Image 1: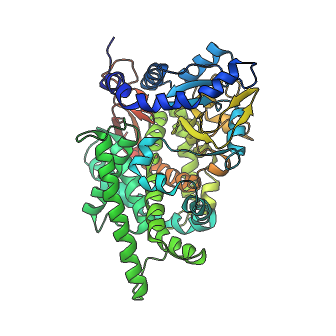
Image 2: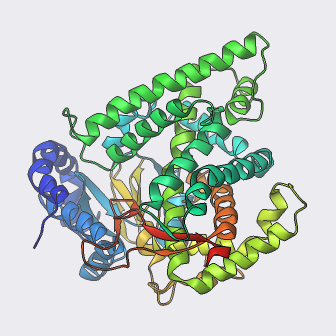
Image 3: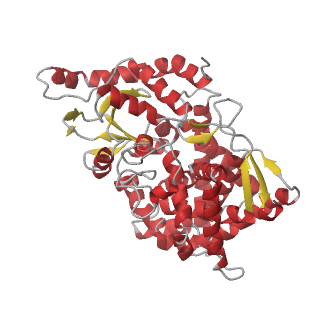
Length: 505
């Protein structure tokens, strides 16, 4: 059987880099495990530990490479006959609780009570300010300010900009090629939508404009791509590794965000014209009202906003285009809905907030895409105190794992879970805590509405302009397109398509 390079690296390098971490983890839980075995007073969930962390991590990555990360969790639920179980992932002792509606509810409702946010070492090393701040001060302030920055009232100001700039993007990047050919192949949709969503995000957040500074946006895009790849790589900080490039790129991003903030403050203090509509200006105003400006805080917020808003948006749009190609009847309904919205507008009139309330079916399609290909398949928290869950003891300091992927593929919540069916979201939709692509509770993604608007604006333009089909069919053959999770979902070929204007066919 062919073993990919990533699996070889896992087998060879993980034992060296993570043995000490795993040893300390086992050492810290020896007393608890001993109590569990004597009198059964503190019984840990069933599962594996010790050197099994190598096998467990490889099994999880292999399931993701096969496009079924949920399989890892389903197999262990059956093996241990328990929805809560113990395992080891990426060198950490982990107790899996999420994956069911009750488990997800427990994790979300106990955030900041008996649970706290935890970041894998790869993230805390790429973004050192996360680790240096701990869980005090700045994170709490960010949780307070982000919702004010990204609430519907604030986002209304950006809809017209999203609409006009997305239309201009299609005119300058897609129409030019499509107009010269009756039928063409765009080799990879993914880079096109990724760059578009990134450049739009940069402009809305900090007014960095691709039209005037294409080189600056391009360089930032490459840096953020390096960080994105590094977060999901082995935390080996050696020259030439993805992780090393991510650490270097993170430092360069921080310097650029510092320059953006300082230049903005110079313009404000000199009473020069400033782009009052972008999020940076709004963030500065909110910070002044909330206790004063702090450059470190603003830089962290800017970096988080750009990364969070652009990291998965391009992935989701690419997958939406894939499923619209695979299901022509779904495409036709989306087109009908978007044409109705367009026909209700006057000549040259831009989209507004009310128009998005008319895009219910389109958003149901996006939600079904996020169900079958969950943007973030797993998440982690940490126990801030000892507690009990479902008859099992969870020691302080242990990591808790939530599996969105297995929740979304649970047949108890979604009958025939492999079937693509946007009608699942009609009416009241799924039961609470069963559809969680944006998390929940205090950790609910504050950018949820921002992402929704960006995706729907893109859909509004692309379906009214074009029809497309896939250039490569789905297949187990490596030469064909496959959906994989590494650990985020992506199409191995980036979605090559044939595309044409409606009137051309």
